[in-house]
Length: 96
Image (tube, rainbow, N blue to C red; front, side):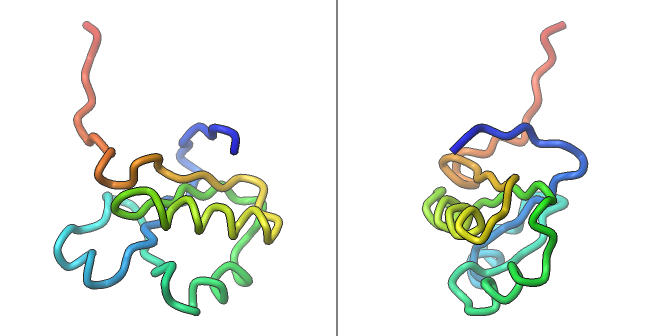
């Protein structure tokens, strides 16, 4: 899979379960779609396959699987957070 740049137009999707979100809230701005529910595949039928999507879970496994499913369905711009939310660092450092 190619690397994609996160842009303001991209949709950030948390594919974790409701239980996981209860213990560890989503990254700000993310929408939640539980990959383990059948409704996830239904949701894919409703959304724009030309839109950019970035998916994540806690460790990266389901994010990768969801991204692969999207690619199989013809989505052109789907990526996942390698290492999941565990690898996400919300602290931005300045070089100045």
